[in-house]
Length: 433
Ligand SMILES: *Cc1c(COP(=O)(O)O)cnc(C)c1O
View 1 (cartoon, rainbow, N blue to C red):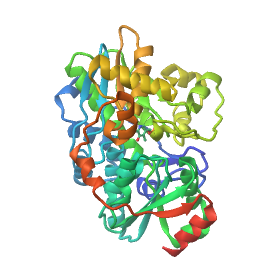
View 2 (view 1 turned 180 degrees about the vertical axis):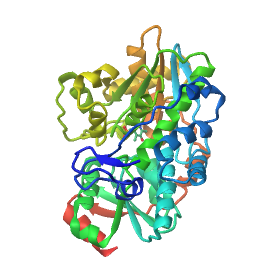
View 3 (view 1 turned 90 degrees about the horizontal axis):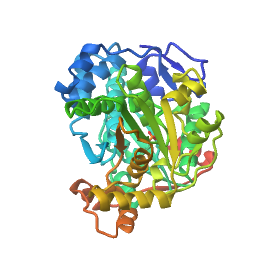
View 4 (view 1 turned 135 degrees about the vertical axis):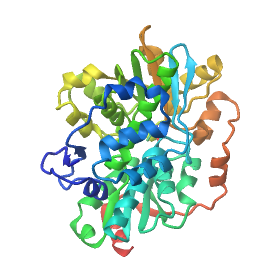
């Protein structure tokens, strides 16, 4: 499979180059030349297959031509050694719990898959000293850092906004050591993302260092996220709930929802999507007006979605041939403020006993408001509520139990380097590593 850039100046790129480069040289995002439709027979018996079996079929459609079958199978099976159950919450609303991996957030799937695929290519090329740059609003850093921890030949630099990630999120990438370095940027997530993007565009840096990105701009990060949409569908089918499925995706950089849209293109019977936003409603504005106007992000209690210029918007546009009409036919949007998020989290706990995290709460609310009587709604519960401990405990007025995996991280010692948001100082740092 070859990849082209959403900016259309670059095409014919191999998977290996797309993964190692991350971002195309014309600053566009890589897209596969074609999206294979999976055969009807796959969907007819999907409920009899395991998560790994389903994921391997999907992975094979994307990567099968470029990665040997045995290696790909190993990558898929090692990545997905945890469950992503669909859990009923209320009426026709289900939670797709994506937080049973090592860092308790959905990004574990893409982070683990990408680290293994990149490791595979680097080994094949006989390369060393690859530097992975990753900007994080919280969860990406932990998933990517933990995915890459100890992977030979690769060093990861995690850029995160000072004071804007929760203490538990922070300890998941600042306490690891080894081949993981945390950079605490005096700025917002958008500033971190801009630093990473500028680094990729800087000729001098790229001449000196082998740089790559592990944000959802990387195809190896975002495409594997389609796996669990298929598995969610399989679980719904088993429950007799697979008609008129609405997938509601709490969205920030739009990598997660884009993976779902790819799934639909591959034939997965999803009726429609909802992109659920916090107050950073750039996508909703686009749906309503047809005009895309990025603006600086504002900070909210669903901080992993505090994104003012979602990078995967370019992929959504590309997927629909830039047709606003086609996009609005399949995707609707919502935006909720912090009070609404808190109110939803609290009410859901009281009425159903189910504990949402602030991101999942945005998705749950969108389904409560927007689901038709004949539809089944699934929202992606993107992180474990304990990752946002202070916020969630403050809202429900109760203690939240911290899973053992998180407690382990909290025991470590925080180590990070302060960094200004100014590119020149970031660049001079990179020149010394
Ligand atoms: C990253 C993240 C999101 C947003 O996902 P995108 O793919 O960037 O749209 C939502 N919730 C949580 C908890 C996240 O970590």
